Length: 453
Ligand SMILES: Nc1nc2c(ncn2[C@@H]2O[C@H](COP(=O)(O)OP(=O)(O)O)[C@@H](O)[C@H]2O)c(=O)[nH]1
Ligand SMILES: [Mg+2]
Image 1 (cartoon, protein in one colour):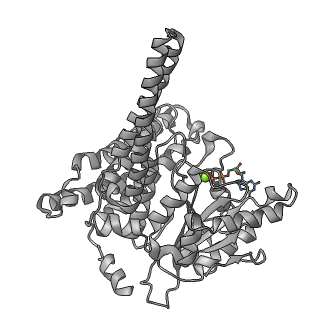
Image 2 (tube, rainbow, N blue to C red):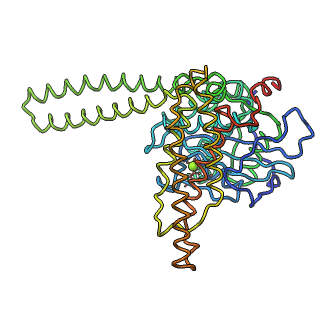
Image 3 (spheres, rainbow, N blue to C red):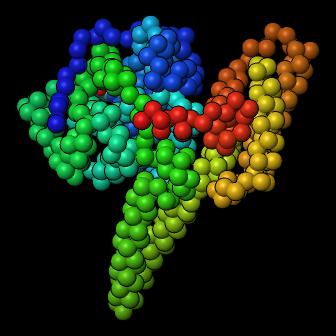
């Protein structure tokens, strides 16, 4: 059944300004316990770049969300923002990058989103549903919009479709044009075609209009929260339960199909380039030969890059964690002993704890019969953490040096670094606690979840 809903008045949800990013806790109680007093849920927001995801998230939380007014400030990483939905519930909204970032390959974006979703699942964080945003101002569904839609569907899997809100954004911009409302309605019916949202709508997703207001954002979120579901996505079970590598998942297969099509186009182009060069040679047009040769070289290097990117999908969950962790780590700014001034007392014990868990992991790995786990390179896993510990030490040394030198300058800011360090650390803690199956208080969530289904 297809339904287009408008939003109720702006009266739901109380913004909790004390909520912190990544303050994400698994549901405290199993979901079949209705007496749960505190119930945190997560909601994932996806859609192409510039569809208003970060703006949507910023309407719900008091935390600072990066909005893409220019290319540089676009969302480049998965981010978690929290707000108190009602007296009992905190909602964690997960902002994601779109699959059309000119600066980053799709494989890299998929790596981060897949890893994050798998980590949520492994930690039994209750996913209440997903919101997919699309600009109503788009005159047609472009190739990149279609790609985002397809990837979204593959990540979700059909079982999750009933917990998806497909929301159209930027209605305000249509007001300015003549017959804007009619145009909007026409575009909505176009979106309902089988090649776009039709299949999802038939299988339980709903369409909603987001008018850009807080009330509208809350209404969309409530639609999902109030269903009290615990949604499990296709990519989560593929990576975590079935131990597939990312290229073996439905989403990975889709990206590879895209890649094969790009290669076919490229091979056709190559033949055309060759023909044009031969023609230019016959006409003794040296300038044309030069121009076409350069074009061919550019096409060749684009193809080579695409091939490399595609190869990045052959990763198990453990390898994915190592890869993403290393990438986060390489983005950490270098600690300048003279400028770092904020001691992070919480960092070192957490790193120590991870190291301890890691040595358990290494022991388990040597006796493991699990082929996916045994492929994980242990040293590679720990390298970012070890290095982080070293940074933490450097930081402390520099803080104590600074204290001796200039006591008034202690508040010089290294928030960015602390935040980044915390981000990667939190991610690793998630993964190592449960994904890799070591940690003293491990609970077999997959069994519990199956039982609950
Ligand atoms: N007119 C209009 N602009 C919007 C709306 N939502 C977002 N924007 C603008 O669209 C641009 C991209 O928004 P952003 O939230 O960063 O998109 P994201 O890439 O999906 O996260 C920013 O310049 C926003 O200010 C909306 O509802 N109406
Ligand atoms: Mg964004």
